[in-house]
Amino acid sequence: MAGQSDPHLSLFSPSEVEFVAEDEVVEIVPNIRMDALNMICGDFGPFFPQIPSKVPLWLAVALKKRGKCTIRTPDWMTVDRLTQVLEAERESPREFQPLPFHYIEISKLLFDHAREDISDAYLVRSLIEDIRDVRFHKVETGLETISGRTHAVKLKNLSAMEVNIVRPFMVRTLQAFYKHDSPEMIQQGDNTGSRPTQVADRGPREKVDVKSHSTSFSFLQRDLRRR
Amino acid sequence: MSSWDDDDESASASASAATTDVELLKRAWRNEKAAPEVLRFDKDLVDRVREQIQLLEETLDDFADSGVDDLVVSLYQMDLDRTLFLLRSYLRLRLQKIEKYTMHISRSQDLKDRLSEQEQKFAKSCGEIMEKHLKQSVLSKLPYGYGDEFVTKQSLSSTEDDMTLVIEILHICMNCGPENGLYSLPTISSEHPDLICLFRHSVPEPQLDTFVFCKTKSDVGAFQLDDIGEEVVDLVADDLYVLRYKSIKGLVEGGRIDLI
Image (tube, rainbow over the protein chains, first blue to last red):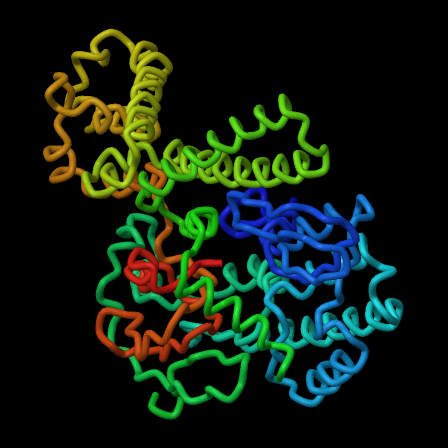
């Protein structure tokens, strides 16, 4: 694994992100009668045949695997909605469309375990893949614009799995810029320097320009014009 | 945006009403994973989760005796396994951090206070084992006169070639303290400031300057990232940011922001 050498860069394994996503609530239509489940993670049911009920995804998948229910496809996972999202993603190069935080994991789990419950499954799948590609391209383009003046990044609507993928690059880049930008680095070329944590006075700084709340992918940078 | 209603509903419901302990533990687990340093141990929360696990284990035993439907048993078993995973992963994660930063933690009471009783014991024995190891592998191998009771200034005024040796010795000085008859640190620091710097670099410390991904729970408003108020970010509810851990540390501790 790439992050093995520095566990802080790749914190969550993909399966751990999936584990978190499995707690997202979905709607199932059971075909059996079952008493309420009073679990550590919450109370669910009671379940009656053909009466929809809300349960966490892991429970839905477990029931589905045993043929005890069908899983209702979430509203956002329809061809209509996804087509709209894809169009909007393509139209706004600096913005991410709102999708569930775990849309990648949820759709993967549903495709793996409840494919027959999804209408137009093939199309839905390819739409989600396209959306992922477009969004990831934006992330990559965004990475190119990080500079020494970037002290914070705002990533509105970025999803959990996307965060996990981009984390090592993003953190390493920001850290490198931050390190080389610090006066400590500039003053001393020798290795006897004090620890980075001691850098309290980072020299005169420019005011930050926090303008763009309209865009999802904004790098909050010090305003160049005032330099 | 009708389809988001469900999400909003569940989000506001979980925020306002009873958030389950598992949910809280999951948050603690994620924060602990994402934070570079060890965070405060929530003993009450862990105790509550332990209790619930024990309760469910007992219930499962009863189920086995009373012949409850296999399906129901397996579902409860999954719930139990998920909770166990979360708890174990959380505790193991903390132990890894403690092991890595033993020396750093042992120097600060505030950091020590963040650990649970068992974790403090673990940290102590980690430190002792390390000290023993360094003594055996370095001090005992030094020529007579440099040994345990007699690390003198002589070794510190040696040539540059002996630098590595000196650093090793400093390591042990720090570990044992002057009360054990070793060279006292203040003297070293006043006469050899460069050595101290080198030495400090050799004690693993969490990198608080690192950048972390975080999500705001509610509006925080204009938030100052640096000491002098020249880097300000407006933190809006439910947005995702990449910020320096050091500057948002307080918000994480106060539960106003979640690391992801």
